[in-house]
Length: 117
Length: 111
Image (cartoon, rainbow over all chains, first blue to last red; front, side, top):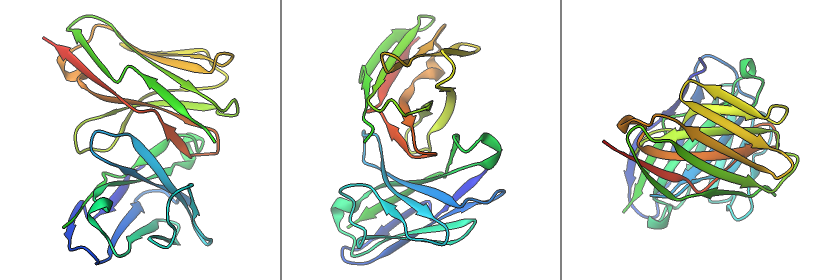
């Protein structure tokens, strides 16, 4: 099946610094990837759609200048949390639809646990 | 936009009993409805999905039903086992991959 990886799996940073999270599709190409955020004991919330070769599309209420998304190639999307603060501490998960699954089925990365001190 | 409501938020059953989790969605254009199982700190794991042209789908102990008219779909787990204990999420997709998730159900199966 399709495999999506994320790096790093966890990161701890100081308030005010920026953190970059990578999402890679390992055995398929993904022109679109999605970024979700999940706070403890809550659901996954869609943050943005990452589009290869064009700007990301952000969901209502998500600050595009704070959460920078770059879809650099057909297998890599990055999410940069700029000037991170403790309230940004969360579990960030990416997903990509596999073309062999009719583009509906999403393959999720393992997630990145961000802790901002 | 799409809104997905999921009930109950917690569910406790005895081993061997059935568990049912229900979801409603708001956007009639939604055409794909996956169910995920998520263990603590891990990625969501697809357990079953259904498309809008199908009313019911079954995979061993797991089944999903969809009522397009009423805009609701349900997950049925029969003969529950302790290893079924986890958080379950329903979701709806109407825009080629954008998943809107329900709030989640914490299922506890007591031996």
